[in-house]
Image 1: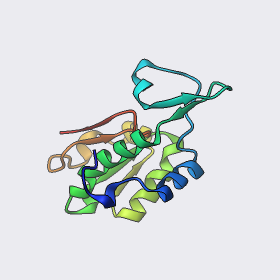
Image 2 (image 1 turned 120 degrees about the horizontal axis):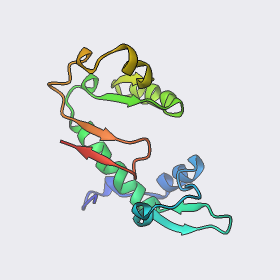
Image 3 (image 1 turned 120 degrees about the vertical axis):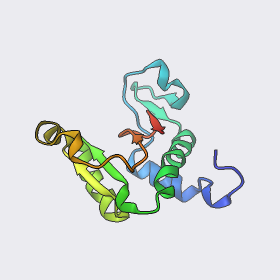
Image 4 (image 1 turned 180 degrees about the vertical axis):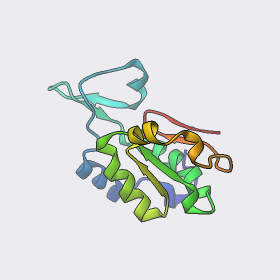
Length: 135
């Protein structure tokens, strides 16, 4: 995935940050589509997520964001309460445009309210390993 560029290789410090954040801990539910991202299952039923695959998906998700010339053209959206703080922090750190609380916007703001015409479509779900699409 990251090719020969050494700077994109996962380092020990990256692994330690993933572990400290609990990124490696999944839930107890299993879906066949998750199988490629699961490292193993603990005795208590919690699935351990493969951090190498997580790193690869993180790099994949970052590509269209990094390729965008103007950071304000990147719109970060979360309709979940748990994702709203993350959206605001990411937008503050990168200069992206936050749209937190999309459920409110669905009721109050039609999609035509925003100018989506010039932006390429990027969808990265709350968990990077689940879905990554762009067109």
